[in-house]
Structures are given as structure tokens and as C-alpha cells.
Image 1 (cartoon, rainbow, N blue to C red):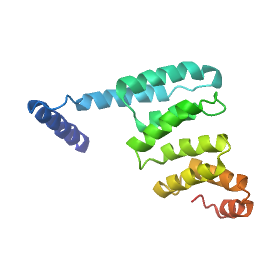
Image 2 (cartoon, one colour):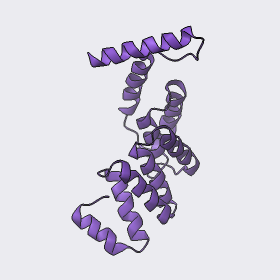
Image 3 (cartoon, one colour):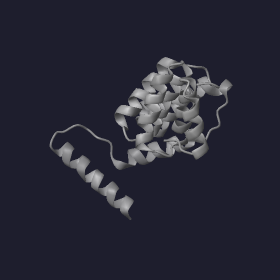
Image 4 (cartoon, helix red, strand yellow):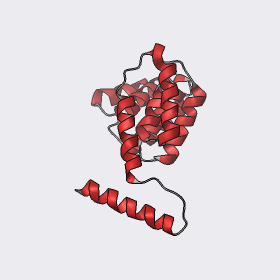
Length: 168
């Protein structure tokens, strides 16, 4: 019932804006269709050998349906090993993710993972800690933080955090 109310209010807002010669905005059905299409694409298992085709389809999805946060995260993950490393694409995805969804820790995770992969350990630690500010229990960010601490020679701190189960 609440979802129907939200859809109805969104559609009224869209019509009101268009009646005032404002920009054309999609109605709620667009977002429902985008979510359904994303679920279908997301459900596919992707091996490293299939990643190029999947990334092309994911790029098409992002272009047609918009930058859903989870789609940006998955696109970024496909740019890191075991998939072929594509730092430029991951930088683009992570930057878009962080600008559009600043409270979503997955944008920070992709940024931190790339910095870690490239040996920029202090930057990886900063990004992981910034992301942990948005979600202290985010496992991926916690793991990057521990790896970055160890790589920076701060093994005792990393070991203590791991023993305590503290990711943030």
C-alpha cells in the first residue's frame, strides 16, 4: 500500500512538472521495469571468461535504465581480478557511485579495492575508512582496511582489529 502511494505521488509530481513545461521525467513504471531488468541481469553468474560480454550488457543497461547503485558496484567489481583489470573503467564507476550515492559504502569499496590493487595503500586505507563511516559493518571495506594496514607495515593494528572482529 505504501509503495502504491509512493508511485502515485511520484506520477503526480511528474505530471505537475510537465504541466509547467519542466523537464520530462520518467514515471514510476520506468523504475519498476529498470529494477526488474536489473534483477534478471544480476542473477546471471559471470566467469572471468564471460566478463567482457557481461560488461557490455551491463553498460547497455546503465545507459538505458540509469545508474542503479548496485549495478555501478557490480560494474566496478568486474574491473578487478579475477576479471581483467580495468582501472580507468573502475575509476569512472566508483566516482559516479560516490557522487550519486554518497551514503552507499559500495562506491568506497570499489575505490579502495582499486587503490589496494595498484599498491596505493594509504589511499586504499583512506577510502576504506571513509566508507566504514557510512557502514561500520561493511565486510568488503573492512577487509580492504585490514589489507591496507598490513601493507603499510601496521600489522599489529591489523591483527588487533582482526582478532577483535572490528572492521571499522
